[in-house]
Length: 286
Ligand SMILES: NC(=O)C1=CN([C@@H]2O[C@H](COP(=O)(O)OP(=O)(O)OC[C@H]3O[C@@H](n4cnc5c(N)ncnc54)[C@H](O)[C@@H]3O)[C@@H](O)[C@H]2O)[C@@H](O)CC1
Ligand SMILES: Nc1ncnc2c1ncn2[C@@H]1O[C@H](COP(=O)(O)OP(=O)(O)O)[C@@H](O)[C@H]1O
Ligand SMILES: [Mg+2]
Image (tube, rainbow, N blue to C red; front, side, top):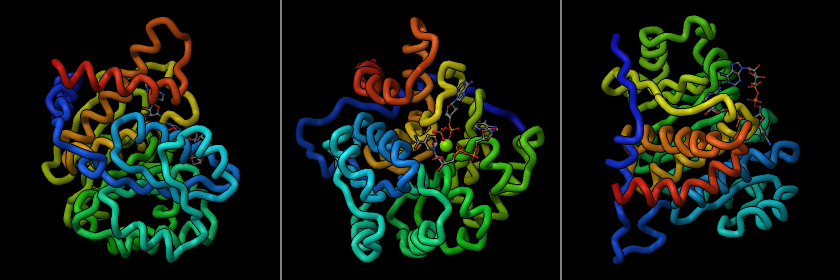
């Protein structure tokens, strides 16, 4: 099975100049769910990435311990107490994109909320599942059959994919990944972003595999995946739920990292977010 390499061409195609006649409602309503008391940074980095990548409206359902830091770091984002379940589920209904998982943890409440999310996400919504959400699904794979969302994007690193798919890291090649995706998602409305130093993207609809040409080892820093998840959510909300939007997000995340790596030994995830507006402007004009 062939693997197609992708680079900046996809970002140039997806990211277009914004029309004057537009408002925040046109660029995606996002709900980000995650950030336990101990892992608040993960959902804050995802929120910062989403806002910096052009999301129209970003809400964050997280532990109240993170409220002050979230507002100090990303005042553009709206806060909701993750424990107020009825309010979170009500807010969920009004979203274009829901990202669940960064720093969520694996508490019984996290599993309860993820279960409701799988049940309630509608066919007009996109769902991005990352980090703890993937580990919870590895424990309860039956939840996947509840999902009615239009588009599901899974963003595991290799260890998370091993837990969810049962495929050991050295064996995570194209054919086996597609076999598991078919089993987990009979409707095949899923895109797998399998993260590593050579991130691959698997589109289950077309059964095609793509290889990200950009990226560097300076990006091997905690929070870099949380940042990617926020960028993917923002691109889905703003450019529509498509494979191209996901590929463009994966490319931009790595390309921003490569620009920073030119004169820095390491790349901080928050610097990648800060680079996004400039990078998107450049691609939109090319
Ligand atoms: N500042 C924060 O609050 C952060 C919180 N985080 C959260 O911490 C929780 C646990 O996530 P982790 O990913 O740390 O834990 P995991 O236990 O899922 O995976 C991490 C381990 O997997 C192994 N591994 C093998 N191949 C890998 C690959 N290609 N990429 C990455 N790891 C690979 C590594 O040994 C690594 O230590 C998640 O909820 C996550 O969102 C992390 O995102 C880091 C930052
Ligand atoms: N050596 C590397 N080369 C290129 N990209 C890397 C490298 N190491 C990590 N990355 C990227 O950083 C991100 C790490 O994601 P993840 O492990 O989920 O981080 P976290 O959960 O800490 O936010 C992925 O997008 C991955 O492709
Ligand atoms: Mg991660």
